[in-house]
Length: 104
Image (tube, rainbow, N blue to C red):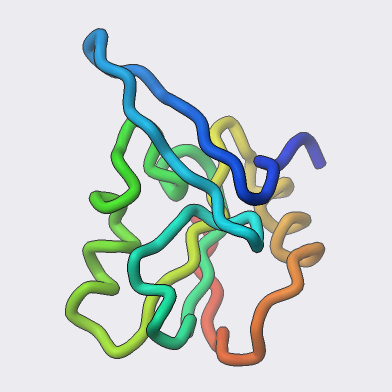
């Protein structure tokens, strides 16, 4: 399957000479400020899904979630292929509130 980011960790991407911090939550998804809402969607895929070189608060999942009564979990990882995203989804224990899966 490849690799996954360690739960409760953080790291840095760099863009234009600037370091951009990202954070991984206790469940292995990217940290969201909307964890007080119900997780209705989970996204899996590559760096576009993870939003590489983007601060946590500016990911597309966060932008969609800010005006909705739910939020979108972000399980994206850089350099992942479709096969790895599907395997990661199959191996991820999701809350029963998650009703929709996005593969990108």
